Image (cartoon, rainbow, N blue to C red):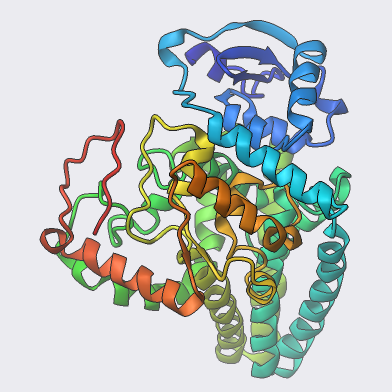
Length: 436
């Protein structure tokens, strides 16, 4: 892996590992519609990434293309190959979902045009809200802008997962909404698509386990501190500045070439463009309102907008993985880990699916990240059946508020380790400890 990791794009070469075999993606990359995803795989073991982004019948075709159109470099040292696990569940759920879509006359991106249309509408409303906030000092416009920021957060999530369209340009444009709301799609892709989706809720791999550390304790393997006893209250307050944190932390990660457990290499042009996006956003959304409205109202209207956006978007995010019994064993197949490290709320509900941008169907999303989110209510029943048939718990709360209450209870339990039955020296390999 040390040799593979050196070919992460820094010298113009892109090696990746799929099923223990090493491939050079360099010549094939410009021809592939998901070039950004291929760059994510560079220098890494990318079997989960490869399999999850080629759902259903396309997987075998993708394997043939990988063998024919890339250069096979060699085989990875067997001692370093990540555990493959038993693929029986993965094969079965893929087949069941493909059959359900075929019965309904759908494919994996049916309805993607809905997200593309929403992106145009939401971005337009956001621009109008910015005008009235920046030049009239309207706090109502700030609130509307915050709601639109959250909606664009959901849309960029689909865009960066290549779930909007087959054509990469539409996915890329929706993905760039991350820059439009002050974040960085580059940082997000490495932290989310690789680290989080690759190993959900596994400490040392999934960056989301370590958010706010050491102030917060989101995982039982994080050492306990006395202040964690009030972390469920601290999180409720801290969420208000979640988007503000982007402006600083993204810059730090870009300059370091690392976001917690995921390192990456950026070309100078890409790094410069990412920094310019940050400067442009700060100029338009903070400096200009301060000049027009004065420092007080200029800052306050921006903070109101960011606070509303943070509570809406992060409120949806936090309930999906911060629940008890969601630490999957390391040796299980990646598809089983996705289910075992995740919970839904409002499964098969189209209304909940719309409100959350598809993130209430987190199990389905982790199994099929490139699927249009409007299809999750369609496939949720067959995914649940497959999980039950294979003895894998399919966890779903009736609605958002019970899920939020579960998150609060879990964080409270982690803050009191004796009550939670948590040992701070949990072995990582094969661990299935939960804070119960």
